Length: 133
Image (cartoon, rainbow, N blue to C red):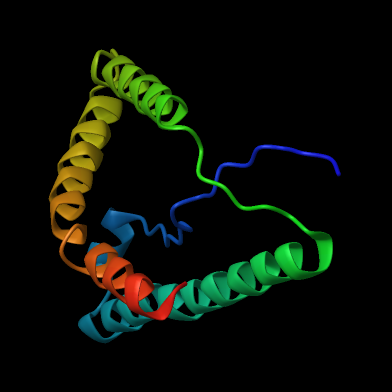
Protein backbone atom coordinates (compact mmCIF):
# COMPACT_ATOMS: atom_id res chain seq x y z
CA UNK A 1 0.00 0.00 0.00
CA UNK A 2 1.28 3.46 -0.86
CA UNK A 3 1.35 6.09 1.83
CA UNK A 4 1.00 9.81 1.61
CA UNK A 5 0.35 12.87 3.67
CA UNK A 6 -2.53 15.24 3.16
CA UNK A 7 -3.49 18.38 4.95
CA UNK A 8 -7.20 18.80 5.35
CA UNK A 9 -8.53 22.20 4.50
CA UNK A 10 -10.33 23.65 7.53
CA UNK A 11 -12.97 25.40 5.49
CA UNK A 12 -14.04 26.39 2.06
CA UNK A 13 -14.04 30.03 1.11
CA UNK A 14 -17.01 31.52 -0.64
CA UNK A 15 -16.97 35.17 -1.40
CA UNK A 16 -18.84 37.70 -3.43
CA UNK A 17 -16.94 40.83 -4.36
CA UNK A 18 -18.87 44.01 -5.01
CA UNK A 19 -17.51 47.41 -5.96
CA UNK A 20 -18.36 49.54 -2.89
CA UNK A 21 -18.71 52.76 -4.88
CA UNK A 22 -21.09 51.22 -7.42
CA UNK A 23 -23.02 49.47 -4.64
CA UNK A 24 -23.45 52.77 -2.76
CA UNK A 25 -25.05 54.31 -5.84
CA UNK A 26 -27.68 51.58 -6.20
CA UNK A 27 -31.24 52.19 -5.07
CA UNK A 28 -32.18 50.40 -1.85
CA UNK A 29 -34.14 47.65 -3.59
CA UNK A 30 -31.16 46.71 -5.78
CA UNK A 31 -28.81 46.89 -2.79
CA UNK A 32 -31.06 44.31 -1.13
CA UNK A 33 -30.98 42.11 -4.26
CA UNK A 34 -27.17 42.17 -4.30
CA UNK A 35 -27.01 41.57 -0.54
CA UNK A 36 -29.35 38.57 -0.74
CA UNK A 37 -27.48 37.14 -3.74
CA UNK A 38 -24.18 37.38 -1.89
CA UNK A 39 -25.60 35.83 1.27
CA UNK A 40 -27.36 33.12 -0.72
CA UNK A 41 -24.04 31.97 -2.14
CA UNK A 42 -22.74 30.55 1.11
CA UNK A 43 -25.21 27.96 2.44
CA UNK A 44 -25.67 25.80 -0.68
CA UNK A 45 -21.94 25.76 -1.39
CA UNK A 46 -21.01 24.99 2.24
CA UNK A 47 -23.59 22.19 2.45
CA UNK A 48 -22.36 20.60 -0.78
CA UNK A 49 -18.74 21.03 0.32
CA UNK A 50 -19.30 19.27 3.63
CA UNK A 51 -21.42 16.49 2.15
CA UNK A 52 -19.09 15.71 -0.77
CA UNK A 53 -16.02 15.74 1.46
CA UNK A 54 -17.66 13.38 3.96
CA UNK A 55 -18.73 11.04 1.14
CA UNK A 56 -15.26 11.13 -0.41
CA UNK A 57 -13.58 10.34 2.89
CA UNK A 58 -15.93 7.42 3.43
CA UNK A 59 -15.08 6.10 -0.06
CA UNK A 60 -11.34 6.54 0.46
CA UNK A 61 -11.45 4.60 3.73
CA UNK A 62 -13.93 1.85 2.82
CA UNK A 63 -12.97 1.21 -0.80
CA UNK A 64 -9.33 2.21 -0.99
CA UNK A 65 -8.11 1.31 2.51
CA UNK A 66 -6.87 4.82 3.20
CA UNK A 67 -5.77 5.24 6.79
CA UNK A 68 -6.71 8.60 8.26
CA UNK A 69 -4.28 9.73 10.92
CA UNK A 70 -3.54 12.94 12.70
CA UNK A 71 -0.33 14.70 11.73
CA UNK A 72 2.29 14.57 14.48
CA UNK A 73 2.04 17.43 16.96
CA UNK A 74 5.50 18.75 16.02
CA UNK A 75 4.47 18.98 12.36
CA UNK A 76 1.30 20.83 13.28
CA UNK A 77 3.33 23.17 15.50
CA UNK A 78 5.80 23.82 12.65
CA UNK A 79 2.91 24.61 10.32
CA UNK A 80 1.61 27.09 12.89
CA UNK A 81 5.02 28.75 13.18
CA UNK A 82 5.26 29.00 9.38
CA UNK A 83 1.77 30.53 9.17
CA UNK A 84 2.66 33.04 11.88
CA UNK A 85 5.83 34.00 9.99
CA UNK A 86 3.77 34.64 6.87
CA UNK A 87 1.32 36.79 8.85
CA UNK A 88 4.26 38.81 10.21
CA UNK A 89 5.54 39.34 6.66
CA UNK A 90 2.10 40.61 5.63
CA UNK A 91 1.96 42.91 8.65
CA UNK A 92 5.31 44.40 7.60
CA UNK A 93 4.22 44.90 3.98
CA UNK A 94 4.59 48.34 2.41
CA UNK A 95 1.04 48.18 1.06
CA UNK A 96 -1.39 49.64 3.62
CA UNK A 97 -4.23 47.53 2.22
CA UNK A 98 -2.28 44.29 2.79
CA UNK A 99 -1.60 45.34 6.39
CA UNK A 100 -5.22 46.33 7.00
CA UNK A 101 -6.58 43.07 5.55
CA UNK A 102 -4.08 41.03 7.56
CA UNK A 103 -4.98 42.78 10.81
CA UNK A 104 -8.66 42.23 10.08
CA UNK A 105 -8.06 38.54 9.32
CA UNK A 106 -6.05 38.03 12.53
CA UNK A 107 -8.66 39.81 14.66
CA UNK A 108 -11.44 37.71 13.17
CA UNK A 109 -9.45 34.47 13.46
CA UNK A 110 -8.74 35.15 17.12
CA UNK A 111 -12.34 36.11 17.87
CA UNK A 112 -13.86 33.07 16.18
CA UNK A 113 -11.13 30.72 17.41
CA UNK A 114 -11.98 31.54 21.01
CA UNK A 115 -15.66 30.95 20.35
CA UNK A 116 -15.27 27.68 18.40
CA UNK A 117 -13.69 25.95 21.39
CA UNK A 118 -17.12 26.05 23.01
CA UNK A 119 -19.38 26.08 19.97
CA UNK A 120 -18.99 23.76 16.97
CA UNK A 121 -15.69 22.17 18.02
CA UNK A 122 -16.86 21.53 21.56
CA UNK A 123 -20.18 20.12 20.41
CA UNK A 124 -18.65 17.86 17.76
CA UNK A 125 -15.97 16.58 20.15
CA UNK A 126 -18.60 15.81 22.80
CA UNK A 127 -20.74 13.95 20.26
CA UNK A 128 -17.73 12.04 18.93
CA UNK A 129 -17.03 10.71 22.42
CA UNK A 130 -20.55 9.32 22.71
CA UNK A 131 -21.28 8.33 19.10
CA UNK A 132 -17.77 7.06 18.25
CA UNK A 133 -17.17 9.13 15.13
